Length: 283
Image 1: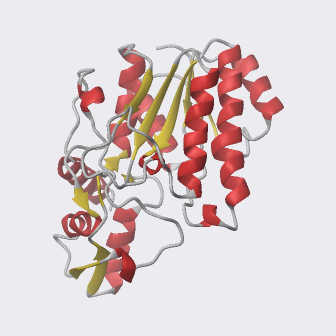
Image 2: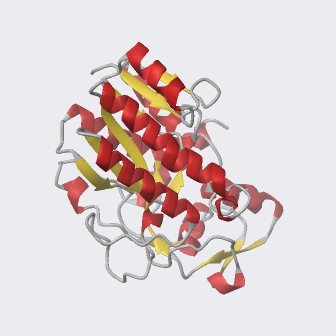
Image 3: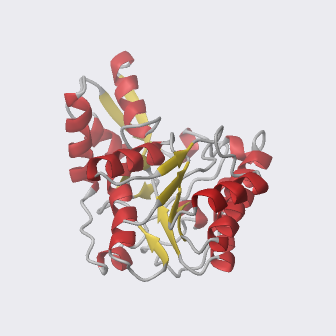
């Protein structure tokens, strides 16, 4: 494979991607924010010019959705819009292909059907607005790019809903989880594998949507996570669990475009089962 550069290498997805590349014996350069500040235009430009990667996996992002509404609003925009613009400009200058990770939060969640790739966007929180601005920057700057929207991400490396549920189950005998938000969980392994698949198979450039197959509510997701734990899980409404940032109520993104490339998408239940086996072996 061509020379690779990864931003956000210590994040949940970046770490997974690095491990996948290590398994395959593929060389890469990976950077954390202290080593490569994507909000520093000159630093990004210089690093890309020095290394001249053919492929840039842009995994760096600001993801604290609730903090993005107020206390970290500026940081959210600096990283997710301005940082992405800097990465795109530097990648375009050296003729690289850019893979940018976006979110289902670019949609408002009012569509009862699946969101197609070309559906109208209408983000309702600051995080979604900034990530959409990042998408638009990539489209306007890059010749060769993949925008991959994902949702409900969980994985081995970092904080996520699965780890939160398992931790709470150790100290509580009863948990309540929202049951009126529907979406698709995404295992970082599946996402990382598709990122490599897109490059390896030179699929058409453009926007894709990748999560694990099937859908569920957060409550149903929690029930599956905790099915072997001695804890009761009860459903509640979003109104009973208020959060600062708006969450889409029905954000099921179509996987048809990804499936048409020949990539096999496991169900979220299959992905969760493999993930639980993996972390169980590490105990």
